[in-house]
Length: 401
Image (cartoon, rainbow, N blue to C red; front, top):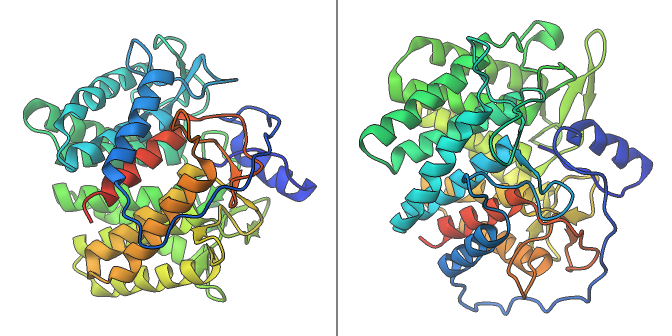
C-alpha cells in the first residue's frame, strides 16, 4: 500500500520496494499556485464534500460491472483489490451516516470482488488486480490487502441486514482463514506476516491490519483460533516493530539472518496500530490497550504532525502528502475520540482532512490528486480511486461530529 514518486535516490528506492504491485511509474508534476488557507472556525459541510467526492468517482472511475478503474490515467484499464474495497469502505461510512442509497454501490462492488478471489486454491485469497470486466485476475496475493478487505466487510456487516449481512461476515472470515493458512507467517525475524506471496519483507501495516481483523473476528465469533492469532501478532509487533525512542512503530524488517529494521515512520502504519489497540482493548476487555492507543496517538501528533500546515506527513522522509495514507491518521483520531471522548483528537482529525482538501483537491471537478505539497503545489497528475475513497470515507465519518 505504499506509492511511487519523484524523490531523492534514497526515497525512490524506499518507495519502489513497496509500490510496484499497483502503482504506475512516476508522472510529471503540475506546479500550481499556493491555495488560500481554511478560514479558522469556518463551518465545513463534510457530508456534502463526501457526496461530491463520490460523484467524481462515479463519473470518472466506476465501471459498468461496479468495479473501479485504478486511476484516470495510466491504469485506467485495471481494477486493484484494495482500491475496490476502500470504495466499499467509503460507501459503508455513507450508509452509517444515514445515506442508505449508497448500499447499492457497496453491495454491487462486493459482488464484483468475487472475480478477484482465487477459486483454484482451496485456501482462496484475493489476487491484487483484475481487468475492468472482471477477467484476468492475477498478480501476487497481499496480506495487507486481504486483511483490509476483511475489516471492510466487517464494517459492511454492521450496516446491512439479512443475507447481505451474513455474506459480508462469511467473506471476512474467509479472508482471515486465508491469512492463517497462507504460509506467509514463519519464524524469520521471530515471526510476523510477510507483505505478500513473494515474501520480500514484514511490515508493520501488514501485521497491524491482521491484528485488527483477528481481534474483531474473535469479538464477533468467540472462535479461539482468532483469539490466538491476535495475541501472536500483537506480541510480535510489540517485540520487533515498536521504537521506544519515538513511541511509534517502524516501517518494516527485511534481509537475511535476523533482518534489517527500516526505521522510517509512516502515518498510516501508526494509525492502523491505534485502531488495532482500540479493538483489542474492547474485545479482550483490557484497558491497558486503550492507554497504548492514546500514547501512540500522542506520539503521532508529536512526530508525524506538521504544525505549520496542520496535517499529517506521509512519512518522515517525504515532503508531499497523499489523501489515502494521510487521511488514515484522521480515522485513528476519530476512533480515539469515540473511545475516550477527548475532543482534542477530533481537532487533529478535522484539520488533517481540511489540509488535504486545500492541497490535493481539484476545485473544478472535486477529485483528489495522488500527491501534493502541503501548500497545494507540486501536484501529481494521477487521480487514484483509493484516494477518492478515503476522502469520501473520512468526510462521511466526520459529518457525524
